[in-house]
Image (cartoon, rainbow, N blue to C red; front, side, top):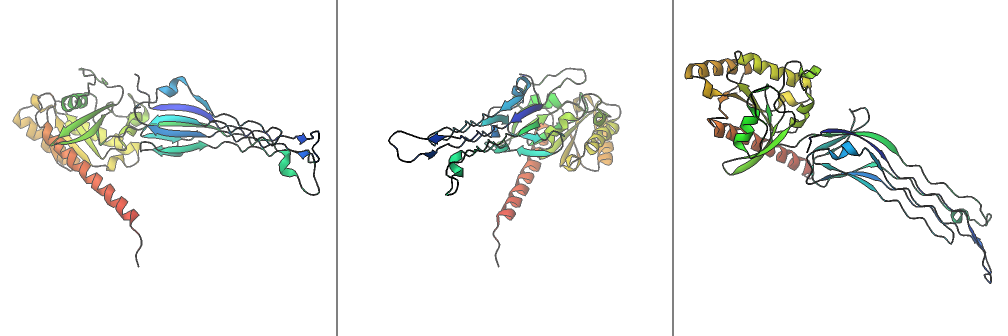
Amino acid sequence: MKFLDLAKVYIRSGSGGNGCTSFRREKYVEFGGPDGGDGGRGGDVWVEAVEGLNTLIDFRYQQHFFAQNGQGGMGRQKSGASGRDMVLKVPVGTEILDEDEETVVADLTELGQRVLLAQGGNGGWGNLHFKTSTNQAPRRANPGQEGVERTLWLRLKLIADAGLLGLPNAGKSTFLAATSNARPKIADYPFTTLHPNLGVVGVDGAEFVIADIPGLIEGAHEGRGIGDRFLGHVERCAVLLHLIDGTSEDVVADCGTVLTELELYGGDLADKPRVTVLNKIDSLDEDERAEKRAALEAASGGPVMLMSGVAREGVTEVLRALRAEIDEDRLRLKREDSEEGEAWRP
């Protein structure tokens, strides 16, 4: 199944049914009069986050979604039936953007979350509604209200606890394959990973989700390489795992390239907790490990861990560091929720 994280859709809510102009005049009935019923209400357009989806591929083959129109009113005071709603089913983590691709209409971050995108039109009144003591035979009825048309963008941002960052061939896919049941493509050429991958890893009895995105290169924010379109998938992560190829000639420059792209991307991505790891240390001797580690610590201003995804050296320590940051983020969110939910006391 092809991974698709951006889709354009056209939606329209149902129009309300027209009111009816009708009169009753029956044999052996003493009084006649207006009996036109009201029109039915048009259907709404909803979006709902459901389980079992991890891509927007369904919206590649169908882009138009229309709710049903309301039925018109009828004689004998019969109201028209309301139109059926239209529900767009999307994966958890989907953002709904307006046509300008900037204004966020809704952000579906929880399973079962449901948001109204376009409200259906009201049905028109039949002539029975306009009967008064001075106008006992009205010959007017209201038309139904028109539905709402909108053009929207659906953008999927994967919900993961940790995100993998690094230049192409930094060993991200190898790390994901070594620590989880995910089987990403691994090869000795750049941009092996073309689409984000998710993997569930475990350490010390705890499990969390890691997202692997295609590698970044210098100028990615300007569209070079695959660009920065996949950075949105690590925006929701609690911690970023920055892998640096230990066999590179200039590890400091490689580290600076990724950090610069994070800052140019904007948002809070550059300020997220980050675990920096010098990878592929199985190809380095002790002196090279110490030299490159010291250079990276001086450049990044923080500790640097050593790891080899192939030899599984230092992998457990890295997973424990990620878990500690994830637990801290969950505690912070829990504290914020409890503070917001506290009742005011005099």
